Length: 190
Image (cartoon, rainbow, N blue to C red; front, top):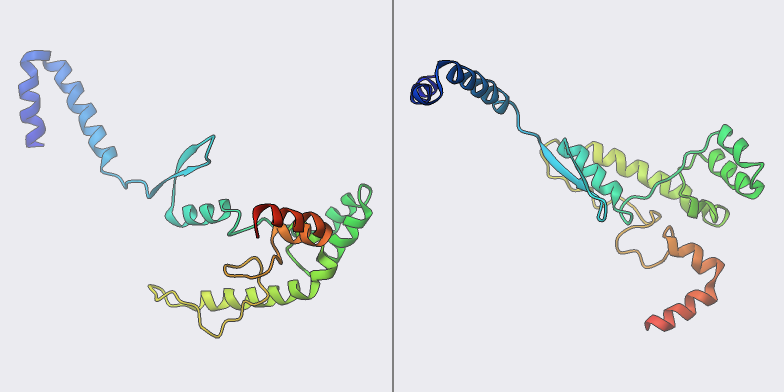
């Protein structure tokens, strides 16, 4: 407060007593606002149409992961009501959605197209992901954050280092249109 009084005494001859008091009040209020907690993270989303907001670092990390299409993919959890709504428009898709519901699978729509062929892998993937979640939850707070070496993720797709197209957008193209995929691979030199 001593510095504020001295600052105001310098302003008084130039602006008058009333202006100095208003300035001092505004300065004090601003100082109180600035003394609060600084925002954790300023997040920027989008490439062409960017928008920014302030968020908690954990929320920002999850949001960024979800935004990255190669790291996390949206999956549907079907309900009987959803399947009833799909059935009038596409009975085959409704039948495949029923398979996902019966097996309690969260599934991407591209994987839904091939659910009959990949059902054993999807069931094994669900079990492996449940084991990975429980192993991650058991890690001590503060680290080290390393999953056990014995953790099996062989059925999880897509996964870094995978040598096949299972679970990727290319899997459907390789199964439905193998000649087009082979021709395209020749064009790009693979």
